Length: 423
Ligand code: NIG
Ligand code: FE
Image (cartoon, rainbow, N blue to C red; front, side, top):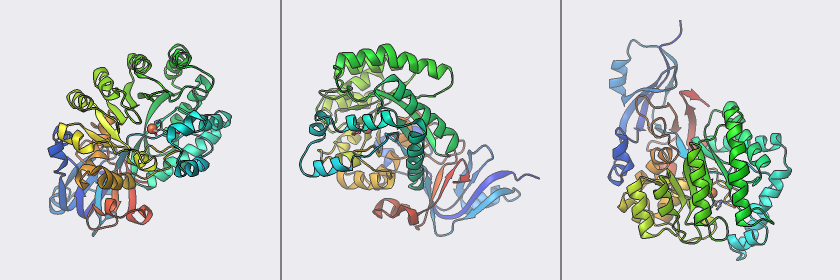
């Protein structure tokens, strides 16, 4: 006879549930107050959802006559929700290790971009790659992210900048949904750069008149499935008006707005995001006070990307000001050929040290708040009955080791569990 439940995780020294009431935890005060249950157990059903979380004694009592497909005794170890990476660019060919050396020698990100490198270099390599090659590279990277504790990841297109290659990237992302256990939220980012040899106006016309309509056809045929729309809103790339037009068109297609803004220059991108009802704006190193206030009011999440600010030696985004204003602060790895970072534990570490988040704030930012930024906080980002059973077993008696220990996740993350299945 089949067991009653899929998984029992028992005797954890701590389970960090992250929250019981979502709204509370989207706010700053809630972020100071993770729900940490000492000596705890948890049950996941055959539907992959959490059935119960609580003290070991309580759970023992409640489930004493139940059977489980699998029982994990995690004495001396901790359990936290699976990490959610709210911003990545994982589909591309080639690498840019040579540009890393140039940047260390003093070239800025935009110096390299204007000289035809940066995103343009990766676009050229990606256009030449086959769908299978892109798929292989993508799956390798997603597997690394999974090993580092990411159970839901946003994946952008954006290294095609033409209809054919953008759709190829989105198809590769779509295939990965069926081949890997990691959860995926796909983002169309055809306006990631103005293609070489084109003007911004021409690129805008191409995105609105050609790429988006073709994308819609592919979505209707079920070839791809896209949740979000992104634009690189930056001086000399897509300026505010072009950004507004593209994001608005995406919203009309039913996509969530989640875009790059206020990174290298103040663009009033945060204000635009709030006005359009964006779920999230990423980067925000150059956000204005008005932008912060508008994001707080509109409940537009700020996706901070500590690995990029670190690698490019940018000024740090004002995370504390955002938290004080009540902005929902989330985190992403920004994995891309410029910031080659697959690790959300490292991202949380950098967020604590360089952006002054507390440990609790960093964990909330990398779980429930990053799920919010992807429109998935009703299913992901915390361990509560009814939510998806995605969790990490941490090889330490206190969960904070995951952020405190710099590197070495292979030893520290003992199991990554998705929908109650050990991956
Ligand atoms: O978020 N700023 C634009 N997009 C990426 C970088 C992409 C690249 O350099 O290839 C980012 O940092
Ligand atoms: Fe990015």
